[in-house]
Image 1 (cartoon, helix red, strand yellow):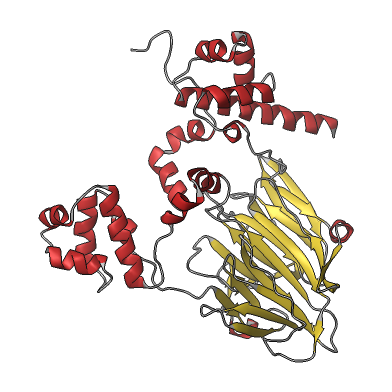
Image 2: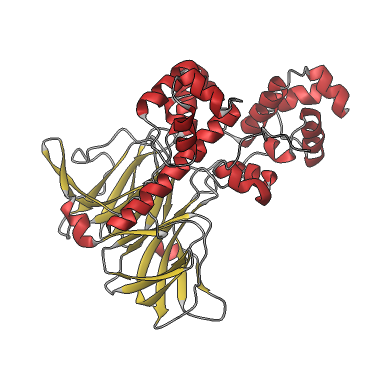
Length: 456
């Protein structure tokens, strides 16, 4: 165990050193320049870069004072999942139990499930301690929250009432049963209760961050609330969304409507109509406008539809299929989701796989997995050339890193939430443009931006 810890620490120090080199490259500082400006020996700079010494906090604080960087730029996420997965048993989850009071009475019992420093999940097991005798959305016993920043997928176990505010800020209720699920957008006020004369209901409240967490949130905060809030465009309808995107790209290009008309041969009257949400642009107009703004057409295309802030998915209406083809090894049940988050996928997976040796999955998303069934299952996986096996008991939860080859064996039932985090989408496209040849340097810088000895 001690050797494993030392290896993890060594790997972390190496990543910190490479990140430090990347910062110096971005600032066009050679190690000797950094040593002089920070007032420390060149040898210490080299040892930090090579991962042989820690980067002290006093050096980080000094660097943030003399260079246009933030303290957070120097800190690397610690990888607490060195074998590709992390688990939390039902017994460990129970030890985290805490009772939440609302209105002076016990309202929820919270328990942690598996979380990782490298994943965007913050999933909770929650028992509803408040029982109600009716399905009235105005029930005074239902104590509402103020909404929260994270997206939330919820899987229901038992008879639970779900209360929420709709677009018109009107209180609504969804009467949920085992297997039902829902998605709720950030900051939508909501609450849950148990229907009376039943066992206390349970929910798996799987909250997670998407693109606005981490560095993006830090940048918005650094710009100030007043400035940052202006990045939020009017997406209340497809016409308003299209108009907002067109106007935003025209203004960041400092183009007049007349200049856009000259470049596109689209009349100024039509451009004015498009920017005032009087109609949607045609495909041909989108192509011409994208060329005028020197962007890809996808930047001007709106979502297919404006979805509700809350998506309720009854279990009996879920789509089902088997995977792989021509087998009944895994039955997938598609749970609540939203097209606004294309890299978030939720499933119930029914497994009938007595002894399968193949690795059936290699998923390019973070995965949270919870054993909601009554039977034990096995997770088999491969990571860095090593093969592993893990028993998953009822109530256990698992985190699996992206692209880890794995499979499940046994007969049981899992709930699976897959989330992209901040990488899939625009970041993935940028990484793809950089190309596989340079990906390693993009992730962990390996060399100075020029060769001091000269290169022909």
